[in-house]
Length: 228
Length: 228
DNA sequence: CATGAGTGTCATGTTTTTGTCACAATTCTT
DNA sequence: AAGAATTGTGACAAAAACATGACACTCATG
Image (cartoon, rainbow over all chains, first blue to last red; front, side):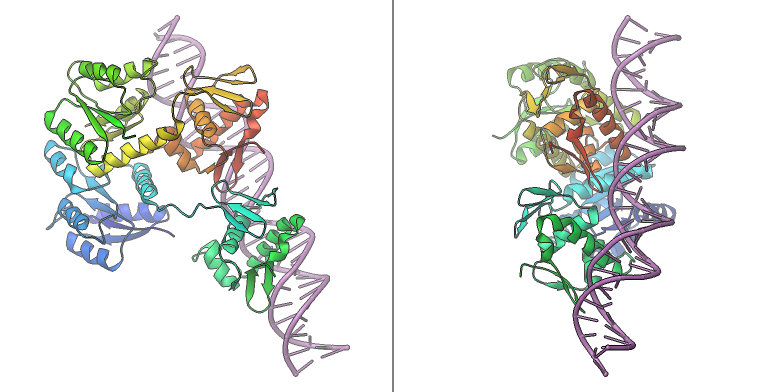
């Protein structure tokens, strides 16, 4: 879920600064200090975004950007170009390099982050915003509402995600740790029994509509969402 | 249904490049190289969007933008400002002059297109200047007024845009960053919490009419405008 | 140049959410 | 049936999310 961001910058201090800011914001930072090792890294672990320094030893950032655009696999990885200064000469090159955004040094971390988020958001594939229906239950990711045969049901964020997951994965049994991975995220450290508590809260919320029986416990294995 | 885009740029090479990219993307391109001929063209064939160079011989781009905003008919034509400068003060100026977005040279065609699409998309659902009515609330984009069952409500510019956006996007939940994109513009670097403050100001303004309950907060997700 | 409106940010209150635990209830083993 | 696992429940403290009020800054206007 967290995006991988590749930082390509030859000056160690700036590279570190960039990587720091990136990780600080919850992204994973990959680092390269020249175009060749960047290419190698890109082929190995396709990043979700590339912060690319304009000037690099050997192959320049512009050249690297061109190559990435030429390759089918890397064709639509967004690139944010880092430039030291905006001078006329660079303008012409910049128009064709295929970068998605530019940022000139010196830059503020906030501006950098804003641009990263903006670019990622633009690229973000639209999630399945479809209305999910199961057995008289309707959950709409878009409006963030749940209702059981007309009656509105309100849930806390976690219960909402949990129900959403269940409704899109009916019939199948999930262990507590699987649910933690899927609903909480695979990086969080919480007790497995916490799942029980949220299952209970979900059932409690569904109770007035009588649909709480959809949340079934499979002793020794986990939970399942299903009619029957 | 293809949109007309007016390119106002004095440097012939860049003008051509812009026009080329614009048509390449399926839009119709109109061209002008100074503010006066731009005005003439605008009055003749109202374009759907204007790409406006910051620096122009004679009347500057900023001045032209101001005039367009002052005129009833051109008041809501979206403008994307093209600027060579990158410092914060100019950015603010550009925005307050009424531009919907701006882009600094050097820019890539990709970036330009992304912004054009973004701006057009933003404008599209709002259609014309029709009076918007929701649940006893009336908002008129033309007169820039809001009233709740006869009682006039006055709002600051930001609250007005926020309410306008909400009224034309009822029921759906928007995250703070989405609201920043939609109401502020996706290039503005402001704290996400700023949204909270403006939500509060909007609620405060709606309170006397009791309609403040339409602005709902969805914990962990954002805000929603809706009855219920 | 003072004034007042409009904004963005911050510090501080308030409310909700959440993870954990202790203990009750249930089911399974022997 | 007793004991061992396993799951359900209610309570609670800590954390997170949100609301609110204050303040500084900018800018157009008089």
